[in-house]
Length: 523
Image (cartoon, rainbow, N blue to C red; front, side, top):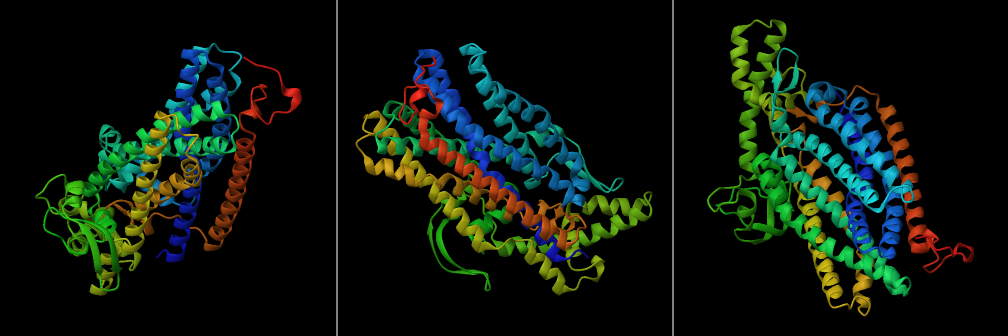
């Protein structure tokens, strides 16, 4: 039996490294397209201020990229160190997108980022723009392959369990590639990155405008960020709806937890805005809901019901009983691969094998599971509702607040009034952390909502871990958090330093805060 402490610490370590890594990723994904836009305008107009914009924002992008790579490498190693059984069980499928990401996307991205920084004087304008565009494509391809891997964990298509090898095997690569969960996740996550990049540029440009320095530079940056941000935040909201639909199809448990929907409601279900959740009695003491909306988002119909938590638990209880049959048939096949009866029984029940394995958290032999233990396993199949419910609402609330800000910012640029409205510039500055908070909440909802599974419905989390000592996990967790915190402080220090210096840090002689001996005009 694996200790619960070991599982919890392994999860905490992975969560900590993933959440730290995801502080850097959205900005990398979003900033890079803003650089493409700015450099495209420079190539088309020849106006040198656009080149300066590309170089200055590119400098901040580069600092962030370096730290994103440093924190990302650790994550891939953790699959082998902390989640060895998981890697053995699903490595055939999960390893493929990660390997493609490393070989195809990461090398493209890394090569192009070098050319971006060192190629200004060596490449023609058009060649350099091509480099910047390929850098953006590489960054987004990286996100695509990682989210295909993650999407498969949420909705394991194109693979099945083989009793010959005792692990999952790929049956259809294209099904994994075009998994609706992965596609919805990709467009939603990448758009959230675009919003982060736009908010970053908008906030810092607002600061320059409030300080009344480098005004022409800041106005143009503000304008680009406002337009790009408005388009991006609208796509996040639309694609979030698509994400909601795929969750409703593939992960009804997560949907019910997000909505704190204990009972199955008549179709179309209402959307609960706020509720007083009573987890002990498994009901909401009171709730405020908008009729019909949830049914439309979750099922795209007026007649399909969204199952509530009680109904889902009843189904899962049945699946656990079927899973016990599957585990027994599998044990018989392990003893004798040619056992025809066991083979037939296993084929009939293998879809519920994962549910039988949930009992292994409490007993070594699933046949010894008492009704109480089965009930515990049934309760495990639904994540805690309160954190899911509120994290989701906080994320959506931030999304709409950013939509309002970008809409006002865009409107002010059309009226050429962004300078006059100091309240708008201050709001943009205060909203700087919003996209990061929303992104972290989004990841929490996606990953915590998948519990108790690493592979949804297939492999329980408590079976996925490596056999490590608790002390080694405490040590490595402290080491990672310490190291990553130092990296974060370094990033913040460099970002603030260069943002304060502004475009003057380029040393072109065209901007405020430049050292006197720097007044050399570079074209």
